[in-house]
Length: 298
Image (cartoon, rainbow, N blue to C red; front, side, top):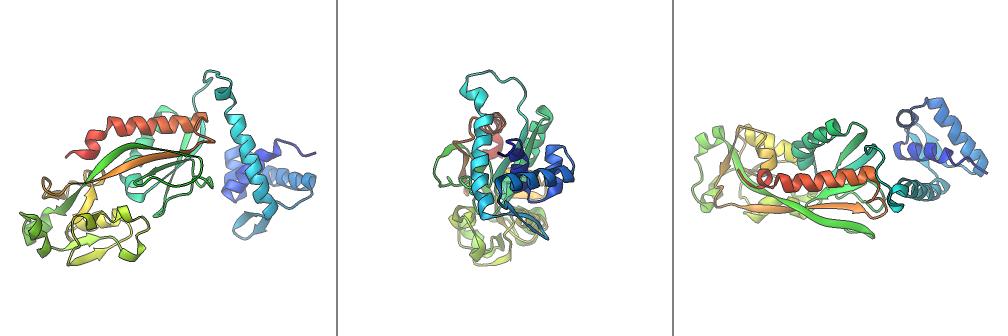
């Protein structure tokens, strides 16, 4: 019979894929992790990891054990809630939040810094991808997205919304003139996404305003687009939460061009009541309500 405690070592190595970060999380040295994994494989008489130059990859048996071990972990973490016991301590541990690059870099990262200061035992890992992270496969614990993700046993709720507007730099507007009407936009240069690399169509928000005749710069990165606009490249449709961070950006036709996107907060029902996950979802829910004005008004 194997040692149940070895499952903790197994889970951390499976999640990180390398000895050093797993050991750091467990507050032990690399050799301890390696030894405990070897003992678990010996006790189970099966190979759980494929050792390679990049680290450790789960074998077929390892994938099967990962599903079981993670289920055991979540049930253990939810015991206080299932028994109706009061929270005995501040939430602690790692919570992985997935979101889009723009809102992660220009808004959420600063807010999570506030959360870290208030709850030092909580570590948020903010993951950004152009596509939606799969919560069902546990690629993340929580998702903040512009479209509701699909998947079995997901708790998805609308948590708020944000506004987008056209922005340019004073340098650009001085050189080219400020548009006075929507029709004037046809004579201007634009910054936009790369058409064939847009993974989530609602992110290609400029098309809701117009199909620009002259795009002078494209990028898959919203941060890169904003930097280009601030440098005088042209006009772009940007979220207020990001544009407000750069004083070089000036609104263009703010009363006429109004675009909004909803914010969805999602979590898998298996972990929604785990203390650390619940603390982050509550923080995000309260944040989007409290800062609705910042997200939607100039």
